[in-house]
Image 1: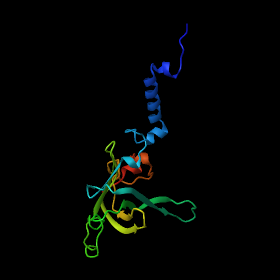
Image 2: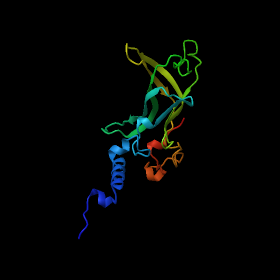
Image 3: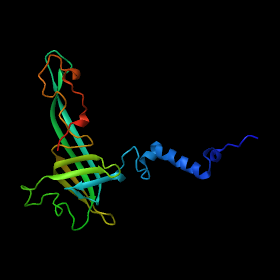
Length: 206
């Protein structure tokens, strides 16, 4: 007599079926976002640790950062396509959103300058880390707060949004000079001739 196969007997037990279903869910795209999956493939805000000046900023609930690697077009006469794209400027900026806790304002925490320390305020550090893997997501050692806006409404939690600018950054790749960056100029500036085997995510500093 042939054995009856179903979702339970194939797994050996009802518990085995549930474990297999849970594993499949965690390995799916949806499971990759789940906070239950400690090693999810996709980074989520619930895994982020935000530190300012090496101090955990627990009442910060959101952060954005923009990294612009600007390039200028080098144009020549009678050519409708730029001859070259030349590096121009790197701009790093972003925002930081937090709840307002009386007695822990940005100026009280020495994050933003006040009216008298504006000319002398030191750079601050901003660091975002994945608490699951301890991998660095973003860090800069030279940032300043350029704008602060606050929302206060009856019956609502007051929130503060800080805008900041920074000089340089580090992410999950340790910055390093590209191989052959100081080589002498050659007639053909191809990547192979100069050994420029690197990606934009490897260029950074703090």
